[in-house]
Image (cartoon, rainbow, N blue to C red; front, top):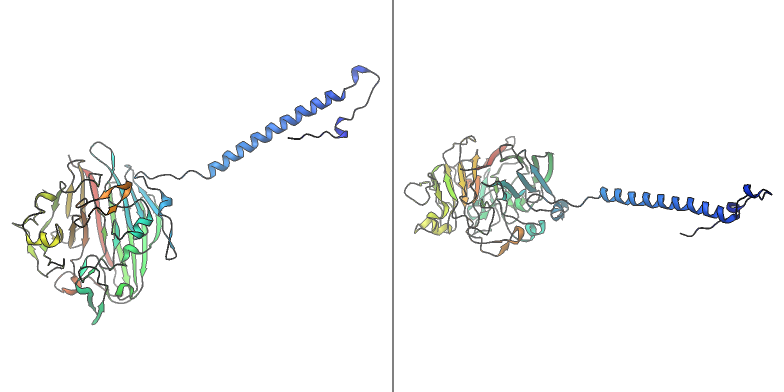
Length: 414
């Protein structure tokens, strides 16, 4: 710092009495000390100011599952994507993105109290956008398959996109899993997602207003409620497509997971994965999971349905009659003792054992997703119900409200 003393600063009155006089050098020393003190004060103020500014811009926090919110913030077709974190009183954490209404991670404790992420997914929104996948997605307008992509609504036939063996799967290649939902988080345990699917989107009739409410309850359940209304008759079948691996490590297969299905019957498929229209009993077949059985115990049996599905990729006809208080399914991992129970108002449950995971996708934490490293439990209307009038109806008319509920509840099985 350059200090300049002016003539006024150093002026003194000379007196004849030496004891009452000051030397110019003494006054300079006094002024210098004052200025030095001022400089120190200014420096301290500057340091404190910088510290306060740093506090105003905190470092980005990472979720319990290792996700960074900034990695999920981008613009897709003019709409903003983000990451929403739900936590309950027990320390359970669920992360959701409004891109595709997806569950990205689910952190639950294992038998030792160690938190495990039990769903597959990606660390970045760009991977969800760039790699075709259904990981954790809200599926619509119609979950599962519609034969040849044809539906008839109010006497009018509609052609839908054919994206799977000549059929429409999960609403086509541009289903709800590719859409940005509007999102609101009313509290730390709830996220509400909404989407307006315009008339004619993916070939479906009617402007469909959809709301999906995901709530993490204090009894460690993800309670998903679906609602929809239309201005023109249409078909609706919404579900969630989370890929579960209860070992917490998707490098492991789920063949040791023990599965129970509260279902006496299932809907057989043909070689193109399309339901035949029949409903067959599970008794005496590898499709019988009424007694808890390891997924891999019979998955490669010499059974036509397993050959068609390349494993389990079938809809079971639940015994629960739409009663959400009745257990529809349960799966348990003997490595971690983590247990997942499924409750639903829907008549069917699609079980898919990751048969098409082939090692070409790298997910969270750089883990490669190999064959049969996940199990999906999708609550739903039966596949191709629009073309099978004897099955529970998927039709929705103006003035009606579509509702559906799915509960994924976690616990430790001793």
